[in-house]
Image 1 (cartoon, rainbow, N blue to C red):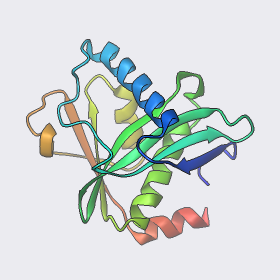
Image 2 (tube, rainbow, N blue to C red):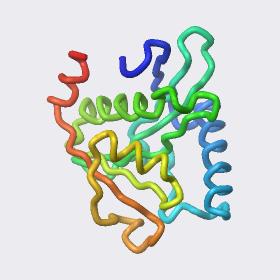
Image 3 (tube, rainbow, N blue to C red):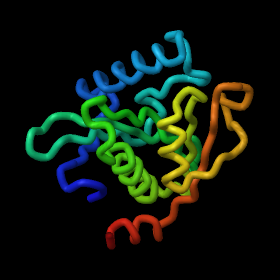
Image 4 (cartoon, one colour):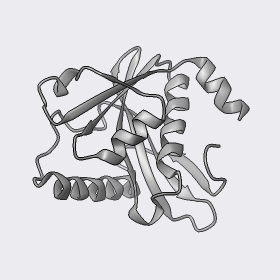
Length: 167
């Protein structure tokens, strides 16, 4: 397990009601930050293209803390989507724990690279990716022409999974 021992992770279907509520909260927060409800440069993730979605819960209370998923881009590449931590749980390494578990899952799914995008007003997301070893890359796919997008990538391997299991 990553981060605090107080966190447990559950893989859930995309249409899980708790996951849907967390994504709605995230989108409302982003709409306020960007000043528009239409802030996503590419197609939103869906059940059809999300390879995995998970929810982080507080172990003792069972309260949700946050979520994150992996969108399938191609056989070797996944994209981090919808990493979100509820305001009351921020600053306690929940986001970095979610990201680390997603990286483990990506290795299990056979991906060799994870990509991510954060909007220019998402300083917290940009810091998360940079502090987690993601390198800035040219904007890819639907973000290629999006001036407000910042894209990142990180190589993922079975060594990543083995190192995580050992810690």
